[in-house]
Length: 451
Image 1 (spheres, rainbow, N blue to C red):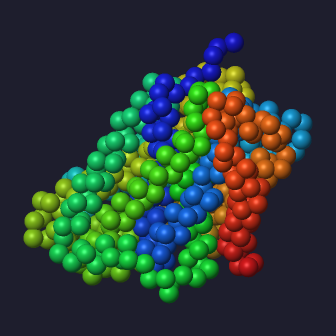
Image 2: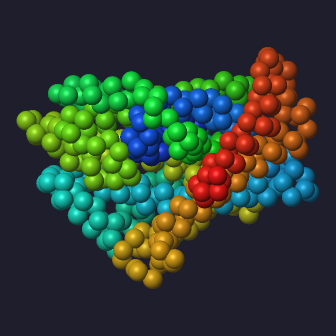
Image 3: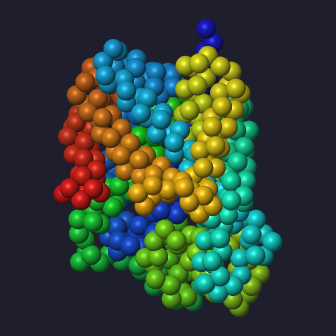
């Protein structure tokens, strides 16, 4: 039997797993969520949620993955035995697989915007950018082409394996992403009137705290850390016995929070500089920001051109690092369960998710029949995975680890078989048994207006 592949260095573990967590959820979703929920207050609650909810959930998935030393479905099956709990792993794989398809569509839009920025097409008034995005998303060819391209790039990385593919790519992509982020942050913060945007992010107005802000921060912490998608569990199966699971989770959470806050510093100073409302919602990235960059750097058009181009390159890299981890969830599953070579398994995932992505893209305007009950196929994929599968898998994982799995096994993984201090083990167990399931349950019920 061949020895299972694993990451070659501690840096590789952190950058690859952080790459899974750092994606469009940080660079796109976090800023508009912060904008809609009071800025600094949302950030404070978000950080608390990451510590209280995100880190324990990450550690739980790490424990399952490393103990199982297998794809997510098999890892849960090893711990669950013949009990129904094994279904959690299959749900995690299915969630990751479905997200890969429609997430690739949004990732493809990022590539289109890189190309449009490069050739100077992103110029015009606010209405132009609104029309440009509407026409792009409804186009029957361009988005599908870019979806296939970014999934093809992902395939070329995944087929090379854990060390030569995922780890090597992460060591190049993550530092590049961080450098680009810092460059745009500096450019944004030097704009006239940028201090208002900085204050918005760091000067809390506690009068804005309400249940929606709290639950929004809870949901965002869950979404941005790639919890319940199978990614963390799959990557943990490549961890060595010496990897400190809690320390790794904390480091990844810190990177996640830093990138999210830097994304806010990149966007809001520029938005306030030109008088754009910070609560522009999901359209912030593809409609509002191109116009913001154009207005903010109107005196020096070349700088505006470079900043806009770098911004969409940054978005594309963030999307790619997350796509790598999502793709690997399904690749590992098909490789091990169907006894295929890595290349064949990765090719199956690439082709099938390209088909899913194509149909999701076409549903946004090109093919009206791909809509049901007021939702497009794209919206249905987003709804089913984001609002049902993610909270359900996360909730069941916490119950599984906290109440079903032998605590001796959990403690052995948590302490690396007694070589690490288990001083916080009981706190971790308390959070997983009680706090995390209740928080996830509140998120789930709240989004359906049941509480």
